[in-house]
Length: 357
Image (cartoon, rainbow, N blue to C red; front, side, top):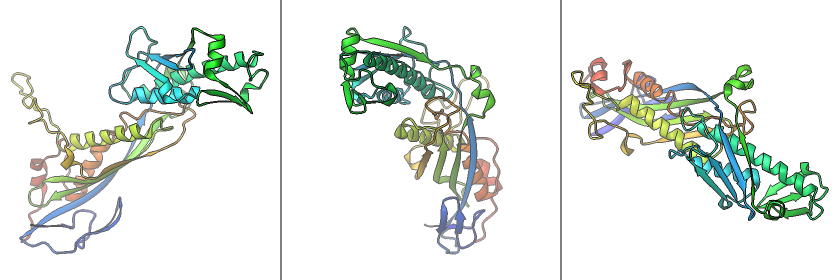
């Protein structure tokens, strides 16, 4: 069998499309009885997702040896909380990441807002950042007033925390020396974020995340089999705390949206209420062969109205509109509008025209 892409909706008979991903030239071979005809369609779906911020608290402790311990009852569900909070504390205190330890998930730690609603990383990161700033302020005040310190009398506004040192102009002192001299048992600070309902910015401004999904599908004109050909997401989330974990999480959401659109369906026995397809042999989810070409572009930015770090939620943004873009691409390819997920062969096939020999 020889596959050739021909006139689906949005394509001319030569298979040329000035489409969502740039111009592509496909084969212009006319269909014959031996040819599998694939109707190709593309769609774009714009999206907006609310950014939620909750009351999250964190404690940061500096030990006499210059290491830091971050404590919060926040969770890590595999979404990268350990990594992101390490980065925030490392940046805030000017410490190498291997000198920062994160402790999560204990009820005696300061209370976070937990994982969910795309609020976890932004809320907890700002709490950790606030605690680090409080420690910096106290350390600088002590060093400035201490005649034993090389930083004595210097303006703390010019201070730079870097690689375990506090630098003001040409003067420098190890962070561990300041702590050991003034706090041999170590010392700590706590900080937290406000609930968004108590922050006037969330009343005065529209604080959201944004994106767009570009999807291209191929639909077999004879069998109505649907294949995702490629998909691209572009997202604006404010400041990106970790580019790798943010991109991975967004791609995961996109794949989840593809699964919702084309495969996932829970079948319930209406007599007993039991799920009929209660294992992954029958409940279908995307596998590698279902996702041939997918990518996410994350635009770095800074939303000064959201919070001090300028970061906003990422978790749920990837799935918002992902399934809709796939559904619209199927419609673009076939002219068949399916309004309930998943979009399966039996829902599309009756609407396809008979192919001429």
